[in-house]
Image (cartoon, rainbow, N blue to C red; front, side):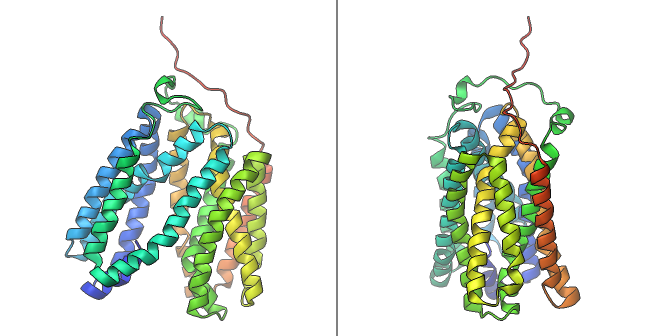
Length: 376
């Protein structure tokens, strides 16, 4: 959505602060929707939340195409946030994690890498459409694709509740949810921390990478290219990290990824030199990709499959709060000191805390499936 900001501000004179707030509202609404999406997946499977999400996306893009005031953009994002939560990565992540018992992390890596590759292609394509036809027509084209793809995918997705490696319709009914007991499972608290830490670091760095590299002496072209390279390398890292996770286990792979990312962050003060910047981008991208590929598999081992979607959705809410704070913290450091040095220290310290949590976490045993008691 960020490619539209300049076009909307220039064409309409709308404040960038209002437009940026609209995107932030969308992220918050998406996070708040994830527990409900997870509950729907556990009860009905993935088809129902995807259908609801597609309807919300259609409504949101309808508002975008017809808007005439800046606040309309905020309203559109209130619809789009839950729409993306219901129709996009959470249901797909849950479906892949539950339905593919072998090489699960690799499968997740391939799916996530596809999303990253799509983002790389989509941004310049959308900019070209905006330049040629304007933002309204571009929103119409984008909305048709974003709404149409989930609707087409519904035909291929399993019906009914999900079952590990089996048909959705044969899945056993899950037991009643005892949230207090579930959240006291061994491994839940460290798992929550391991979702929050990457959110605090990765998204904050992604937002500030261009001004950070400009501050250490790189031109705008190199800084923007570095952002593209980081996304591209992370796509490769998702596949490679998934393969490693399937071989050595998700927790071991996550530990390795966090250590690599901590090392990469320590290189940030030296990235004025192009070779160091290149090494940083490779290490950082591979580590981030690995985290994306193996974390859902680790969560499945912690929670088991009976209420996996609901509980993982709840933890994603915590991750979304961290993502919401992530760009604010480096900005505050810069505003106070005129430098990103404090932000770099924060990123390194936060990642080292994540490393400590990961190495303190005990490898979870594969949870046995639970079924609801059968009354006589």
